[in-house]
Image 1 (tube, rainbow, N blue to C red):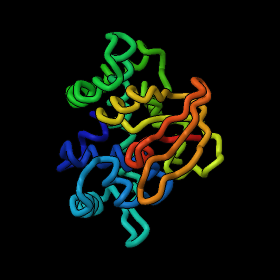
Image 2: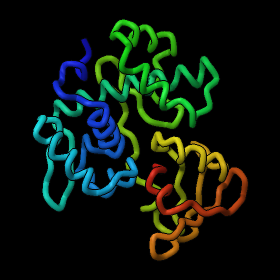
Image 3: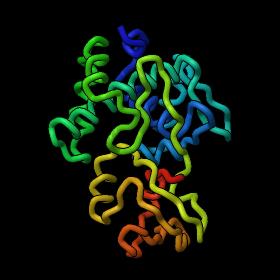
Image 4: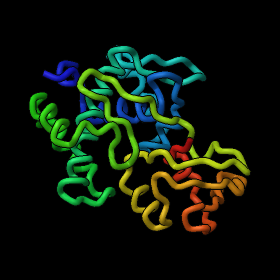
Length: 224
């Protein structure tokens, strides 16, 4: 039995929060309610309510005015959830030819009906991948993985050169990035941040083109 299935009252919504807190860096630092709200596209009040539930379950710790981080147990559960979800995403893209923006929903279904034995065999079949198609880490069976970058494009400084490291697993975001032709591994020059939560203007080295990334999307794109 996997660790996630042993936790009582672990609803799909709680799982979504654990996965996004993990993705935002909540294993090592405090993640703000605003970051979670932006990433899940939910109201701030909903985040506050769910954070309270995670704290009560012993899966997270919350410090007023600082943010939320995962407890040791919360990290273990999140790692298992992320591993299952991202292995299935990798399989759907690499073996079945899914488009990146279309894998999330089916991977979400598959991760909940898969035995630990099948997950282990799937990992071997895929060649022990370390990252999923949108750049996120895949913990191995023992919970080992290289920590992701947690700097978002929105926080990059004007004049700085960065490399696109990963994207939040969000359908609308992936469609948007496809439209503006932004890819993993792209080297970007930050040209400027428009005021009042305006877009971030960038130059993409691969194409030589200048483009703008919306304020919201710039919080979904991680760079290094």
